[in-house]
Amino acid sequence: MEVKLYPNTMTRKSPKKTANIQQLLKDASKLSDADLRSLISGLEIVLRERDSDSSDTNGAERDEYGRPLNQQGYIELKYIRGCGPYRYLRYWDGRKHRSVYLGKEE
Image (cartoon, rainbow, N blue to C red; front, side, top):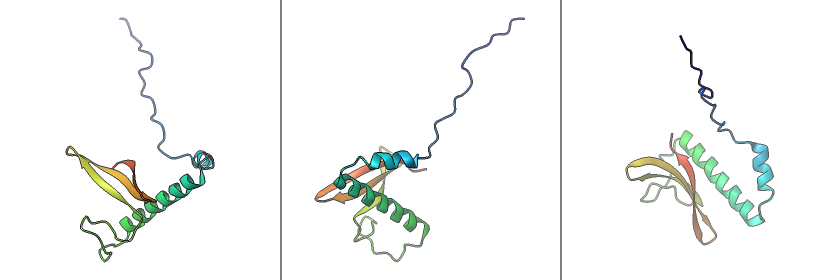
């Protein structure tokens, strides 16, 4: 009886999804002042959205699309061709409306 061994058949571990904070800070130190302010603004929006998801926001004023009023940015859930939802960070950078893809909603 012959036994066949197949090399490299073990599944490989997927890379960790946790962010390396030290690397993020190192990369952020290389940004221009304007880009760094934009990054901070975006992070504040992400934190605010997380807080609003965990707290009761039924009393908050919202526009016709359901977004909170008087905020510089928001997270939008978008469906594309029936797939999704996909998370996008939408915010204003001066006179430009910017968008950052955050990944698929889990």
